[in-house]
Amino acid sequence: MSACRRRPSARGLAHSSLLFWLLLVLVSAQVYFSARALKEDGVGTTPDVMSATSSESAEEALLKDLERLPKLTFLATAYSLPGQTASGENVRAGIVAADPDILPIGSIIHISAGRHSGVYTVLDTGLNIRGRMLDIWMPTPQEARAFGVRRVMVRVLRWGWGSSR
Image 1 (cartoon, rainbow, N blue to C red):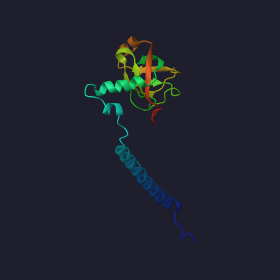
Image 2: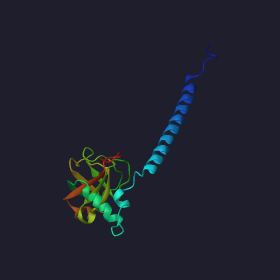
Image 3: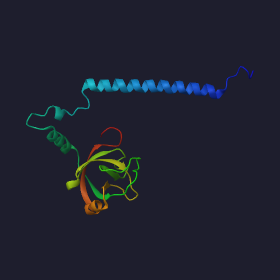
């Protein structure tokens, strides 16, 4: 009886690798056909940019789209510590820390803050970052001190790693 019986661990490994391969094939097919359908439908292109007249540049059309998004007021500070963010990325320009209950990690925002205005990605959190607070990464401590504490206008371009709201 024991001579006919297979080892359960060997059968389990063969079964799990088959399931893994099947799952990989299904996911690959889903990604391929979804991307193909989006390309055929023209999804992912900005309509205002595509219909911009010759006198209006693509940048102006994008700024008009940005103006349509609601503005949120945040209190911003700056930091210049080296290391990794809460998302595992190394700190670099274009990263902000935010309260994940307000702006989840992966959110993409536009900050209006004078010469520090631009598009930033929320990839960090902070112990003292609660509510509508942001901590913007700066390359040097001098820049961070010069930034100080100020109110900034924020427009959310994407909420978290998922889709936009």
